[in-house]
Image (cartoon, rainbow, N blue to C red; front, side):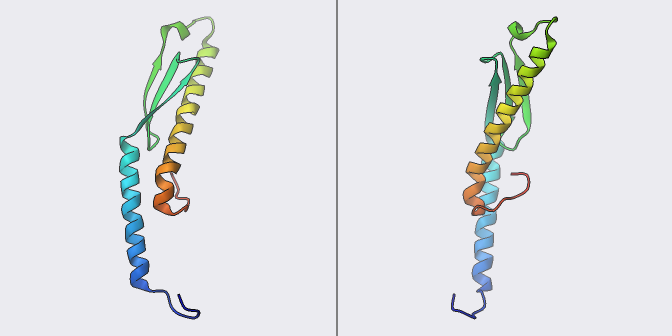
Length: 107
């Protein structure tokens, strides 16, 4: 752009439309993706979508001890954190190119 020249509104609109299409595609890919988080060597597994919707929790019966519920709670929480981190990384990977590095709320 020349110094003092006004931005080309048509070009800006095209770029915005392209970005919107890329974001929509990335969101669709995230919605289809399923990631897992595990803890305790696989004793607890949590499944989450790429959009952050938790779908399932699996607990191996070996992890269940009525005298030690706290350990199971810690394992579930660790698996949730592991799944959430995987989801965050995937969202950054998919949304980063679509948003040109802009940070969008919720992604």
